[in-house]
Length: 114
Image (cartoon, rainbow, N blue to C red; front, side, top):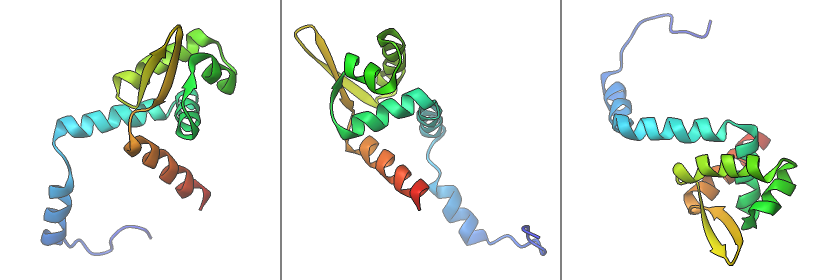
């Protein structure tokens, strides 16, 4: 059976584990990030952006959906600070917000491939 056969609380371990949990607002923000990344299209966008900066048209082509649908997903990712953008004339380019997001994606892929 995969549950404890004897009920024993290891106080030191419980304390250490409880202290490792961030404040509620941080946990809530993490939940929102993971919810955003649980959408197939948004995850594809983030994976694509982990390879290189792309304009909205390029992202739409990679994901094989409309630019308006991509824009909707990008808005969600921007609000959560997963991606950021820059304008170059009339073209809007997107990239991952920082190296932490890139690391999260790469480590997640490695974990799944193990």
